[in-house]
Image (cartoon, rainbow, N blue to C red; front, side):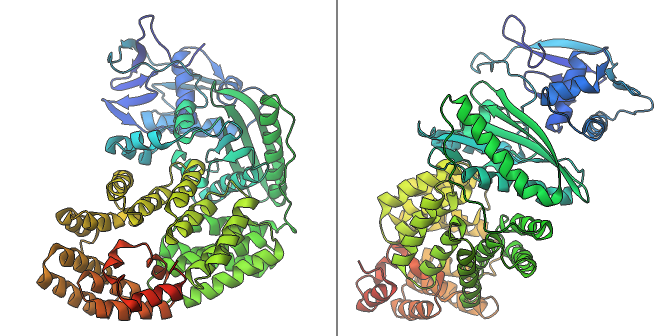
Length: 627
């Protein structure tokens, strides 16, 4: 048996070749001069096979069986040739005059370089991992390396709990884009997200699917399945690839049981592009059936409902492009997503999911930009209502509408009903749990909010926004030490993650003013943003430095003439600077403008200096948060 090799004493095998190359079979790493070289999963597996069976002719059929298993007929010419080409690029090998890999035309390949095997004994304190078969390994991506270096991955793993005994958890890892064209990533990413949606709707009471945000950490990666099992808390993993041309699409998929890395099922599908949606439903049905059979129980009745109409492939392709930008979450990307979704519904006015995604994009823009939210909200509301008219079972549309009526209408009862409806329709929709946790937080129901946040985290364990908003619940419930710990864990993974900047507020409440100022300076090095000056006014005001607080307020007003800023941010600066009169006046304006930030009035400790003011209490009553 080939794969990860060990000597009798527990050491692993490292193979040296050429003047500087080393293939560490135990560490699953190719190095040159001691430095790690980047090599994707399939090229790495082929190189391992060639090196371990060096001198022997390895046929394409042997490679295909080793990498993908029996019964899966792949596009051998393109897939294997492309992988060999990548190996040669990394090793700087010449196909005409090879030093390492010789091509036997029409038959296969042979590794021809002399090698030297060495045993590498691991440190006593680090247990050597058990041998694992090779084909399902996935390389660690840059974000995960950052987590390791920062100590964040240990925290993530400690946070991930196993799924409930009555719910099987599955991760759909990012489908590989085999076209060789990076501009087609939107298509393979879109197929991944669609499979998550389809599988999440099959039997949500008994079958959970990890959300997109978490699985995208494993894109272009060869991390072992047992690592993924621990990090995501799953029992099954679905991997796959996709290749498309002008008229056809080829999809391969493999289902692996995580506990023993047994391949349960593998298939290849060739379809006309127009049949892609039907193909996704077919794969989802097959996978859930295979999992149910492997558990030894009868197949559960799937409660997924087919959409009222199937969009054309042209509309669906535009929808995937829009989803690609929607998931990036920056203002320019959200604006691009809106344009794509508007193109979709212009071509197909019956495509409910496109309207739901358009509602999401515009609703997020209402909060992400500093522009008046009314225009974005009007578009978002119309899109959400249109989606529900077309398909009342869409959890995404109910969730978008819940956010709109909460933030803009301050209609807490309807918002609650819509969030609960979304969760009832699809308990696997992590965003519904996440936003509902925020809803409960604004109402001051912190215990319920933390429980709902935990449900979101179980479905999306590596999501930074869910983790950061969990920190916000801790902050607003006055658990400052725990909030700081949570925000620091997020910042250890992504130092520039925007939502985690409210760690500054937690520092202020703990009287850690130097830390608050340092974090503020790190996040706003240009000092041009009025939001920076508003925060600085609060830091200096609470720090007992009134002159510096007044200067910050002056700069806040000066810069706001050139940069759009919501009224609630200016109010925040004034209350921090100790000017309660101006703070109340600007909060009234924020209420009139339907500012998203007005929903935090009840729980935000920054507004505590205003709570004894009758005007503030009347405002709370109008916002619907007095009880």
